[in-house]
Amino acid sequence: MKRIFKTAISTAAAVVLAGSAFASDWTPPGPIKLMIAFKAGGGADTQARLIAEDLEAKMGWKFIPEQVTGKGGMNLAMAIKDQPNDGSVIGMVVTETLGYNMKVANAGVTPSDFTAITTTAGFQMGVVSRSEKGWKTFDEMIAAARESPLRFGAMSPKLADLAYLLGKAQGVEFNIVNVKGGKGVMNGVNAGDLDLGFMAGIQRKGVAAGDLVNLASALSAPLVQTPDAPTFADLGVKFSADGYFLIVGPGGMPAEARDALAAAIGEVISTEGMKSNGMISKAFGGAAIIAGDDAQALVEGDFEAAGALLQAASE
Image 1 (cartoon, rainbow, N blue to C red):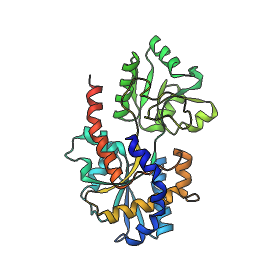
Image 2 (cartoon, rainbow, N blue to C red):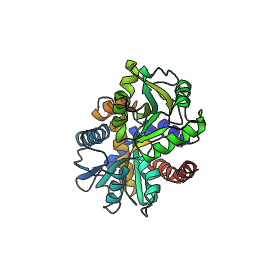
Image 3 (spheres, rainbow, N blue to C red):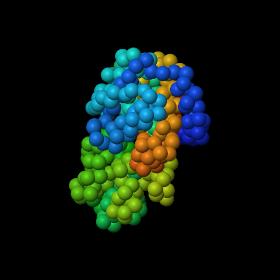
Image 4 (spheres, rainbow, N blue to C red):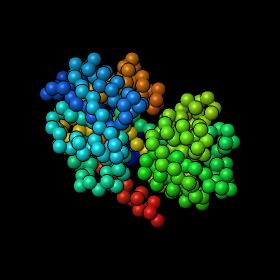
């Protein structure tokens, strides 16, 4: 997965430069329905709508946003799979939707039934606590966990499994609490209802202000904001919470449509001055573009890896 990411980022400039050429060769057959797997008004919903707004301004394409939420994006996946695959219907989910969530749902579909168009941004998923807890490092938190179980907030089943494996690797048992959304985790941590939890970028301001601490990176790479925090691999967990926001379409989308959409999206989210670029830069540290065949390989690899994670978490 890291290889794909590095390759995609290194070629992001080429995707952006090629955007106008791809887009001039293909135009949508009409308005594009943009399904959004996130609740209205949240950061992910805002990102999707700003991308649509920028594309309308730059390309002249018309977008019709529609909320299709629930079941970790699987409601959107099942709604989009039988839609026309001519580029007139696309959706925003996270890669976890076509990976872990699709594996668990066992709904008779796989990532090959969908067209991965492009990612837009990655997660800065950290294990976070309040500074007032007194833990400046991950090891200090583990020492406290050995004294008494800590309440660990997780906003998805995959993250709950990762929290369990993290505790197992460290010889402690967390009291894992399922929470709705990253904001819910942050609110729980700030209110003292949780001792720590997963946050995927929403912690940035709190960490900068000194109110929150990134104890560890749940990614396969260090966090941008706190690169000295250990990764899950450093802590004995071979799985990670690597993930991206993903634009997806029905399976079998012609390459011409897929590549034109990917190039146009890549261009607006990577261009300074565009609203989506500003939002993604501020909230997620900048665009992360994995497009076309690389995006398809990414989600299919995640789907296969989900089986290993489920097996490990059941032991």
